[in-house]
Image 1 (cartoon, rainbow, N blue to C red):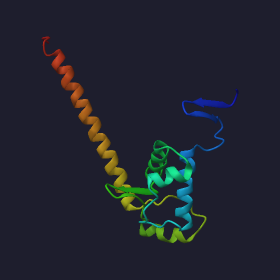
Image 2 (cartoon, helix red, strand yellow):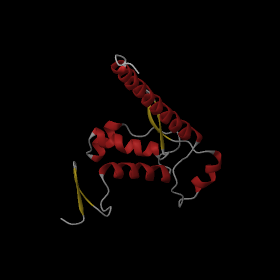
Image 3 (cartoon, helix red, strand yellow):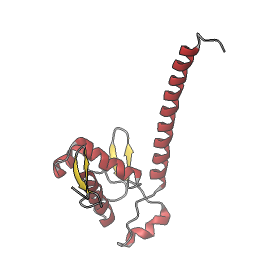
Length: 144
């Protein structure tokens, strides 16, 4: 079939076509934020609630939430859940204009993104160190 990309989870038109379920979930939540139904600081629906509402798997909901967080629309609070990101004061005027569709790029969202990136970098460094230790232990018997 020309123009159709087959993936592990099914087929999707190559030119973009119909959005995947995680994209639909993310866009639905973005629209609720843009419309003011969900305000900065409000808790986002739980994973279970989104799974039920969209008939989606937990992985699909997790992908939607990751996309929202990556784009600055949401932040996580460990042990408490996901929340709508806060706007910077400079963004406050834009919230009054319905044509604005940019994500809430508040300071809290940026700090969380940086913390997440730092944590990932620390994990990668630890993995690399472990590999070096293994390699050096294996090469320790050989003389230079």
